[in-house]
Amino acid sequence: MTATFDLNERPDYDTVLQKIADYALTYQIDSEEAWTTARYCLMDTLGCGLLALRFPECTKHLGPMVEGTTVPQGARVPGTSYRLDPVKAAWDIGCIIRWLDYNDTWLAAEWGHPSDNLGAILAVADHLSQKRVSEGKEPLTMRVVLESMIMAHEIQGVLALENSFNRVGLDHVLLVKVASTAVSAKLMGANREQMLSALSHAWVDGQALRTYRHAPNAGSRKSWAAGDATSRAVRLADIAMRGEMGIPGVLTAPQWGFYDVLFSKTNKDQKIKPEGERALSIPQEFGSYVMENILFKISFPAEFHAQTAAEAAVTLHPEVKNRLDDIDKIVITTHESAIRIISKVGKLANAADRDHCLQYMTAVPLIFGSLKAEHYEDDFHEANPIIDRLRNKMEVVEDERYTREYIEPDKRSIANAVQVFFKDGSSSENVAVEYPIGHRRRRTEGLPLLEEKFNTNLATCFPLNRRKNIIDTCTNHQTLEATPVNEFMALFRL
Image (cartoon, rainbow, N blue to C red):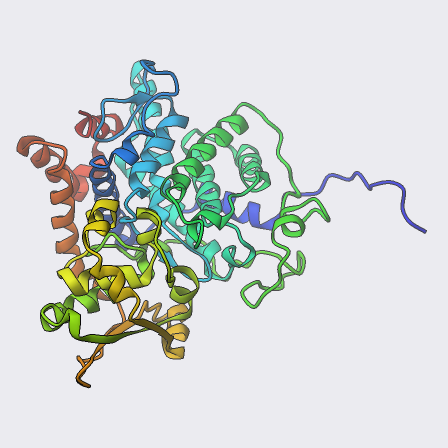
């Protein structure tokens, strides 16, 4: 006989939510590598945001919803004079951070950019610090910001290890919203019930589709989607802090929960757990693993699966630059994720389309010996038809070892190889790069270049004296940790 009623017994909060909440509220970070890497991540992320201010398509989104509005104790947006409420400030900071696809990356069953969470962290921490000072209290310090970054990276990254949201059509900014909600609530002083409530609302929200990241619909929304997610996270944390009740069974509720509604396509990446066939996998305890292993984009503002292809192409540039018209074909050997995400043929409609095209990101450095943000713009593309001619000569093939080692925990390579074949039957060397310069395995080589990148990006906004103050603060770990957040953010204000 069919039941004619629901059993209305309110459950405990789903286990996944409890694990995230307990980590955010109680974990003590003792990894010196994580603290140091977080400092470099802060520098790099802010630099990426400052560089994006050179692009009008980005800056048109910034500022208050009502023109001319000034918010007392409002959060500052680096590189601007804006002082905004924390919700809009998170949106703006997240937008500039992500605009050029140049900040850090995490690659696993799900992909993403954990430094996107800095939009929420800085907006909330700056506002709260100013508020505390106005009340005669001590402001938050930048150590709290670094701690929040490590935790946000960990929440987003561990949830991404074995859970493929992209395979069910959901965008990775879902995890930005969840991670930013957790750390925002902690910064606001949440207790466990408030934290769980905030997290439940982050999961119950309608989640973004990946439509805007893929051919033939790739577009500029992908450049502000993370800002949107961090902004929503701040709002949800605030709602929970005001006493809003949570939704305990948001993940597991039959028919109405996240698993049944949005995680319903079973595939090899989804793990079977006691909570249900489509339960989220948490394969390891939350700690500081993700920050320690984060990938930096040092050489190229390009989707990360193409970083090593671009590096290989730069290596080949001297050999092929004077023989471009003699090229018969170009073979790119890559891994399955790159094929699924960024391998595309046909017309590329806009800059966002180009910086997610493996073939485009290989052709440009083959021709010019570099790959810069300006190389994706319409005028550059239109002025150089040779780019599309080379794209049309490219073959993309999968190497099963590359695919396998991409997900192996002790490797996590992002390998690509490029070889050029000429019409006379000759060919270039097959240049393979398995680990990009921003990989943990290349930290010694990469960190000095990361500092150079930061200095270069600072120069796009600030005079020498200001740059020196910022660099002196950021490169001394003890000085940075002790700096009040409100004073740190003032360094980046126009």
